[in-house]
Length: 91
Image 1 (cartoon, helix red, strand yellow):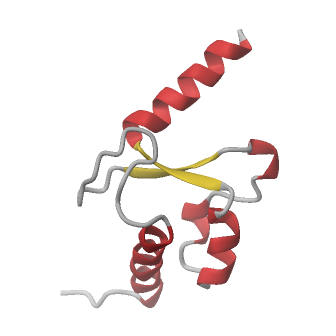
Image 2 (cartoon, helix red, strand yellow):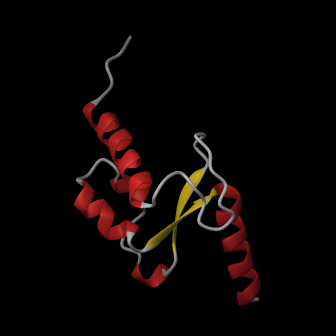
């Protein structure tokens, strides 16, 4: 069995801290709670977005937290709904 890389362990720890930052594993729209990996981060202001949070999950948490303040935690279904409605408004 291959040992788990340090960056993978860091990402796992930072995802745990991310859920703590948001007060648990709960969608901020529909309030579904799950231990399954159904959650995504949505930047509520795309203009202020510096990076995708998932691409910096192996960094230090202060850097991640700076970007988390610009996001909301959504289940994948609600995240897709938000983007669909935004596309509809632009039409």
